[in-house]
Length: 420
Image 1 (cartoon, rainbow, N blue to C red):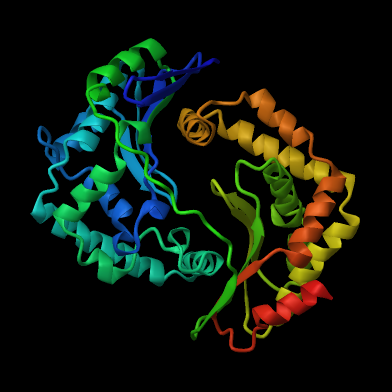
Image 2 (image 1 turned 135 degrees about the horizontal axis):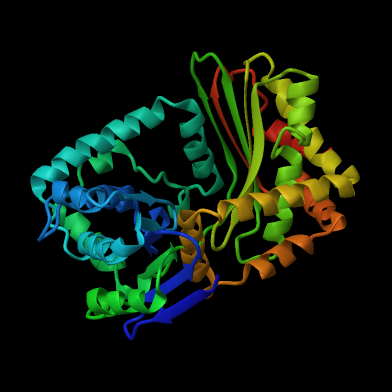
């Protein structure tokens, strides 16, 4: 399998990887226009725009967009994250040109029909309401807000209902005009694809676009803080975030191994100590997440209100203990889980295409898998312990609590336990 790249004269990038033996391909366009690229008054518009992508173009109705892909047995979808919006499809190899044409059509020729805007506005407002009714979803939005208070990166992707209720056709067109230039788009494909064909298709569809000035991204600073919402729920939801490295920092791999050893599976320290030995919860895990200039390790658990204080204290103790006695065996297990998860995931052309797009977005190139594996293998137990010490004791932290949490320890109390 060979990765190939090409950049059109206007800055539009194409990256692909042929996967022998496959009869299908995953193909999409990743646009560097996510939640963190919105101004305050635009919060939620990137996600709104994603919804409107499938509501009709100058040449296809909403039904015709769906039929074009589904008539050949494929599927098409999109998602919005804090740093990108992606529009992608999975089709058989002979239908790759069709997929490029449909995705290009919805990006370049949306009509933003006012009636469809109102229909989709109602759908998004229902989505916001559903999120607010799902404690183990909404708590992560609240935690993100505390991590990056009063910053674009801290705002929800869905946006607040009052702003979503006011977006107009002109607002949508304005966001596209600001952020959907050829230099902000990456066409990525994996599977049964021919790179030269993709380049020709991209040139035909996107080569005429005029370059746009790159939007200056608002830098992010991990502020930390606490949000506590008391509600009569069955469970108390606990989410703690500790500042970590961004994805351009080599220590990102160290953090991922630490997070996995701490709470990444059934053999992890938190799962064994908190659930298996003490029976304090059903769900507990830790995970590492990174952005271009910052990141965090998040620990989540759901328990009863009466047991939350004990669970929170043990969590801090386990974080600190890892700095003292993390073993080579634990690091090797976490390393193996990390590599296996990555490599197994890349057996899917959809996952592989997404990886290509993200790496081009980050580095403007695709490091080899061998290079990535070597970086993971280079992490030592000493490095994990040193990072664990920083994250457990002195790194900024944020806390979100939801449910019967009136007796839960404050962030200040947890900070005291960290420093002790």
